[in-house]
Structure formats: structure tokens, C-alpha cells
Image 1: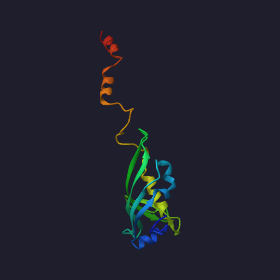
Image 2 (image 1 turned 120 degrees about the vertical axis):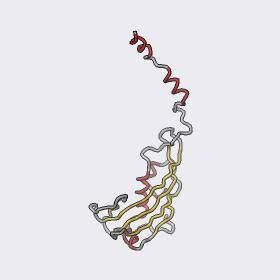
Image 3 (image 1 turned 30 degrees about the horizontal axis):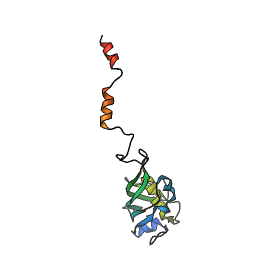
Amino acid sequence: MLTGLPEFIDPIQLAKQHHVLKGNIPLEAMARIHPSLNEIKGDVYFDWLFTMDDQQRPIVNGILQTELPMICQRCLQPMLFSVDATIALMMALAEKEDIPFGYEILVLTSHHPVPLIKLIEDELVLALPIVAKHSTCPHNEYELDDKTSTEAQKYNPFQVLNQLKKH
């Protein structure tokens, strides 16, 4: 499934070695995002640098990029949602550790290997929109055009009451 990439990683060991992991993982391998997608096709590109910060804490910096085929919830038409996420994780063995600004904590329960796909899928789930929608829907038949909205503003059924109020 992962060509040239390890299935399980030891993030702390990778950070000590200043290791770079990059590649493509198919969306088919990430079952938790399937209900959010219109089609299950495409790949997720990632480029992550595992390193240590100035206090010798293991961190991961990198990017996550993909195009997700989704359904616009406004017009119910297919759309592509672009994900271009920046990843900044600090690995810790306890939640109480002080994390630097701009980093999220990744709590490791032990030094057991972590599935690489799970880490990438977690970050992709966080990058999903709450509601998928076009910025401007191309075929929205329910959207009012400018002409219709100005006509609705011109006619006011309570205008008669305004004239009675003056008398």
C-alpha cells in the first residue's frame, strides 16, 4: 500500500536522526474520511521533517496537500476542495508538557511504532471543512440575482401604513 514508505514509524527516533519523510498516500487507505468524500480517488502528498527543537524535544514540521472530491452543501454539485495544510507537531509522552507557540501536541502512549497513515489521516481530518461549499456556486438555481433582489426591495407592502402614520 505504501510504496517506499514505512507502514509504522518511531517519531522520536526519526526526530533524533533529523529524518525527512515525503511521498504520496492514496485516499483509499484513509477510511475515516471516506464518508466526507464524493469519490474516493486521488493521493495525499506530504513532506514532513522530523527534528529536535532547541530544548531537545521531538517535533515535526511540514506540509500536507491534496484535492478532495466533495459535494458542495449549497448547490449539491461536485467540487474539489484544496487542502494545503502546514503541520507543526511536538511529540510528548504526557499531555502536561509545555508546548511552544504554534505547535500542537501529539501524545505518544509509549515508544511503540505509530502507523504513518494514521498520523497523516489525523491531520487531514483536521483540515476538512465544517461545511464543503463553493465560494460561488456555478449552477445555483436558488440564488437570487441582483435584479430580483432590487425588485423585492422596491415593493414594500407596509408602505401604506407609513403614509397613514403621516396623516
